Length: 485
Image (cartoon, rainbow, N blue to C red; front, side, top):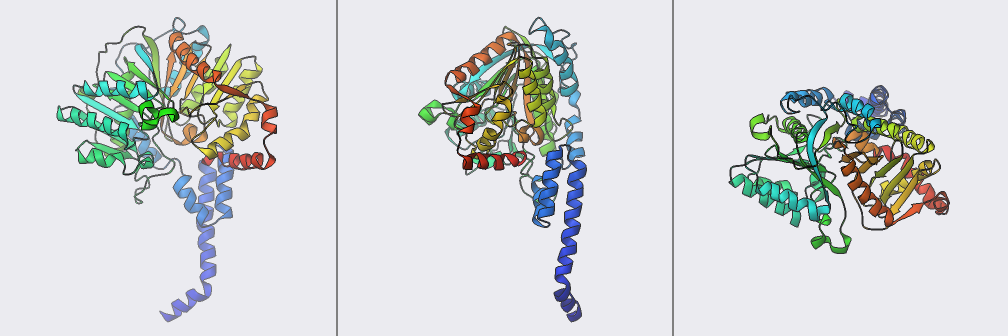
């Protein structure tokens, strides 16, 4: 025993070296073999090799974005046909609802989404918490059989507690209730709202608390950023809005943040249920029966439009939104409007946006003047010259923070939902968006974006060049780390 101890004391530096080389080499090989983006591969290999012990640990926690990939994919495809839609033929032609150039985009959506494009949807735009939360509360209070609620952030504040109270009332009426909150997003308020839900006996769960199978902790990168509310399988809500009092004027006053949400009635609600049901089953192992959680008839008001859900995430739907936007920018003929709180597209999307601008398409990009994520704002600023130089118009809105994620093409097609145009949304988060073939909806969204532009200042190359060198350097350094923000 003493000889082993003395041997270890003499050779421990060599043992640590061998261990670090083995672990670091294994992690570097894994990063090189599994990362599809060369920048991400180079970045992670560099982090691992420069820090042989801490680097692999950091990569294990934050870099492996497809842990349990097979299991996730299996869970997400199990009985998908039970939820994804009725057996009516999908819509054949979108020209009457939008424009002829979107026929090919519809085909792309068929292959990317795996949800059918369905007609007969009534979509109502809800601006801010002042419109969205009351509409959600009315739906919850009128629920007869089921309520499915999923959110990235569900704060324990005045608005969050109102939603909890409504869910508790529904449960007491005999309504089946399920609430799914992201494990990281739940930590935005203290104590977390899930404690209140559990106290009242509301079935709830945290998404991705134990992805490694042995380490009980939220996984930093595999986040569910989806926002879904479905009542009785017939009325749905989705978009970019979390549940937070900061979006309500009566609470936040002159500092109220903005966002955009959508109330949906029609067959696309089945697709919202499908996404929730598979996320819930993956998290809790509970399968939700069709007859309680779905409806085969809807009372959709006019106008009725074609729409479908598009999932994306680090499973078999990787790059769903990325591929849809590449196709959308390619078919644009006159105008692209983009509103995003976090505008950090990768080089492929930047190339598509810039190519559209060079083709003569008017490209408007609207971003917040006051961003809630300082590092992301620095990285965005460092990249803006790449789109401005190619003819895109960039607008910084001089107003309170706007969290909306809105895209319209040619005043006839819209893409809305939870996805930001940044590496986290495009590669790591589980996201949910809708494509909508409707001139009326596109005009409503364009009006919202134009209202933002009216309060905005144009970002110019001259203005970017006037930023002090130390700040431009800071922005570029942070931009280099943008895949990890």
